[in-house]
Image: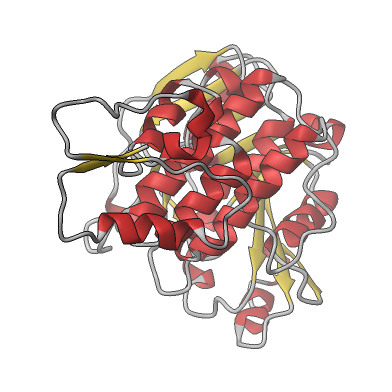
Length: 344
């Protein structure tokens, strides 16, 4: 017997948070759903907590293979018309599924829906039992690649038939290489039409804690590089639009996270490895903002302002396959005691 939603939750050592995640689903105002939880080789009390819910959810265990493989396993057990991803350290507001159902009915069963999240620094004011649903505001786009929305695995609602048609999630990722799995999925569905983005209300709470995978900049950067490699192999539809989206994601993460947090070598490496400065648009702007150094990576483009009267020196730096050393070179320029210069 089919249900409207299958909530898919991979779990690995989340004894502190998983009960709240599960309870947030079981107390939804919309009740036509099932929960499929896959324990990914936890060594804490997570399996015990999940087992305590009995027949209120499907619960299976597997050796530790990473959250992407666990999600894919959960999807293989699902019978819902739509698959909804919820991480085991996040939780739903009580009106989340009701909101998703209203949006799906209004837009006549779209293949892909992206929901909005709240990212609180504290949780005193986001108790799901006290939240009230805001009027729904949702936007319809031709497809995902027409709206380069930031996504999280807890924000994706995808029709199960579409998920199966595009091959689901990657089967060969590991606990070390799963990063950017959400982006990989929506890129595989990138030309499915239409794509609906729910702006209001927020339906999911992203929990910030010391174990968040988003804090591992190196792993995320490597994940984005894998996306670029997959695009070059032709694994995503959409051609140039997919390439542009990945480049924008790379440049935004390089500047907005890595560079600003002091991981400058990683930022430079990510821009070079994905070719993020070559696709134009917003990502070109972000890449150039890396203290004006991005154009140095493409010095042959000839944009030096060497004759400008506004600076004493123009430091020219051609770069080719120098990810191991270029960060130190740039740092040495930026650390100069004499600062009347530009870099290109």
